[in-house]
Image (cartoon, rainbow, N blue to C red; front, side):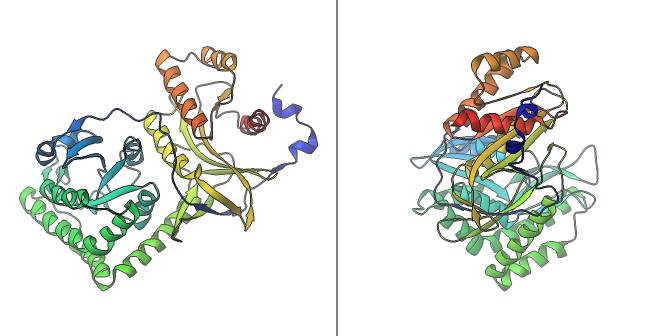
Length: 406
């Protein structure tokens, strides 16, 4: 018999059914304190390695330069759904000075994808205290498999060194650097992106997307950087609303999504979407969900992607639902079609051992999950792993978690 079947009816009624309701959440964040436990050990390089492009064989790396140690991640596209950029950023979060390099534009060919950077991407990095360097691709090759596309795109490494030279002398925080990057450097990067894609197209013979799209974006920037930021913010709100209506393949959601507006210590507003919310009396669970259909547990990259959101959620100083304050519980919910039962970070050792044994977890998987449990416990959030085929388990977990947390 499930624990939820033993819950008294008056207690069961404390779950508020949010299905079909548009839940608006506001939160405040004043600082960022978080202890990462799953960061990959990064290899240390020198500036010559960066200039040769060797460093970019790694998703993230350390760079010793001008008496600084920078932890640098890089995005292969400005679109966050490609190559797990949040997981790359996560691996830099236990280093004091964190930098991420993001291309302003990536064009793969007229019949391929073309993505531009968006304001909400830079906003999230600012909230995480990550310095953004906007880059552009200078070189590329014709794709040997798909002749109408280009591949092996490379940043202008000399340009990146110049930005690192400036950053090494910079005294303000990531938020101010990122705003400066948008206000003073974005137009230049956009123009250089346009110029070098023209050269790439000429050298490879691959037709890229028309220049008008880039020119239109550059025109917006020229007219007013403030207008560009406003336009990008509108796009972020639009993306927030689209994501609110969409279920991703790597999500297995039970309750509804919700939009959240985060206000920082300077009064800036940032717009995001929460995968799932569950309201139990006055206890609000803000859930980032990751799902696996082919393995007992989602991939480590998926998990790190979710942990980036935990860095924000665990630092909310206030959470309001329709203007009313609620106690909130940051939650990373992992689901799988290949397990039975559930476990969470307040499960006892015998319960965990039984769960691992019943689901034939490998030693490596056990170690990884226990590291995740350690991170959740240190940072005061709920992490659980449950059978996605039994959705009622989620409420059972919530009730059990609250009972054990007291």
